[in-house]
Length: 425
Ligand code: PEP
Ligand code: MN
Image (cartoon, rainbow, N blue to C red):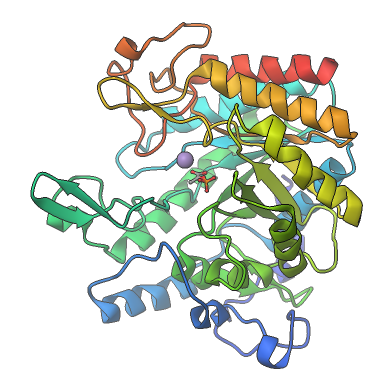
């Protein structure tokens, strides 16, 4: 990351005119015209219901005035790196918390996660250069399988991540509060500041850590979206890469509509319900120009499903000659409930999905582009197994996640070793 460069090209700091009418460079025209609010005319899933609409509107207006967290130039640099991954010349490592939280925010956990991602990237880079992207500095909003949670006779809205509401099971915590968006923005800015400093101080200085999160909370993402004065394109400046979750990737839905119009690289989660035909139609919407580096497909089929379900999707892209980065999220298809009620993921199942993913790509002559992990640099006890042979009885010791169970530093490095030996075979 070269600060001078970005200051010199400071022109490309996108103007904060997200509300202005779109110019010629925007995708689509007429009825199909895109603008940062066009998603509002589409059906939306997973959207919180704010009790006070005026308070929400005031916060959105404030957010629009705040500086971008990342610059268009940096986003373009990441896209160019991802194009190399799409061409089989590099690997992508994406990792971080399932959900960042206000309570668990400290220099030491950021430093440890940064260090662990670096160590994993070094382990993988014996084969190809590694592009590293954190699930960090903005990964606050969570999709939920049910809108409400019931304990005994009490039913309350589900926890949707610290950017929306609080995890404690009481009515006040669970009420969506728009002020949380401002706090999430501030925490993201502080996090990014430390990450940039750690990048500058680390030994592998040539590779920087880019940021990413799920583009779930669209009012926040739209308020972070600015027009780049150099290219005329729109960028969501809340992160370098944004991804669409497995629960919000419907054709015609609000999340696809928002994401199609931003020039950032996009991730797309592909779970077991994704069909080849649907995938191609989604890609026609998100990547009509077939631009290498634009799309990263994140398969999350589960250890039992990957060998059966991934090949048809990979073949569909090969048939169409579509460029894409394929990475493997071995976490979300391998979640189990342990005795005692803890959500966990056995390391061996996670490793098995990674092995299956490499096998499928090898068999089809496709580039296995890398990994997407929920991990932390801390020594948490959230996933069982791994080199420490954590058992279900160990889970209560340091179970700290605000959402899904993460690999700890030792498990994350062990998984990088699994990937490394697959790359060698
Ligand atoms: C996640 O990455 O935390 C997540 C919710 O994943 P998915 O959309 O694949 O379920
Ligand atoms: Mn998760």
